[in-house]
Image: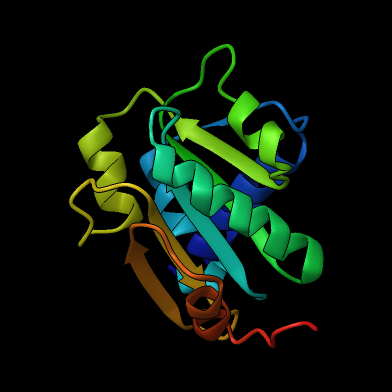
Length: 158
């Protein structure tokens, strides 16, 4: 079972890697489960759940983009909690967000949300932080750089 889970995660990541920066991979429950699994992240990783209508999400995304530039090992994954459409990439591009981009696919939004985080009640922004050693922290709302660094085990850069 664990081998199947790891294979599924590898397929999800490989599919995401073949897309251009503006493309979004449609998220299904299997991919959402893989993204939310701490075993899928061998290095510090931020999974940012966001919406194009969420002002506070854009604050977090800007912070995460800046942190990814300072910490080269940091992986940033974004999940738009809405279907991909024309212009969805613009808010990410505007603040310099790079990395894998997912958007809700055809499955039930509630099922996708539950697969990402069973304790999540839909509030945005929602951030999943993986330290790369099996640790996971989920935060809602605007986050501070210090809180993110602490959860990921990153050292502040001078």
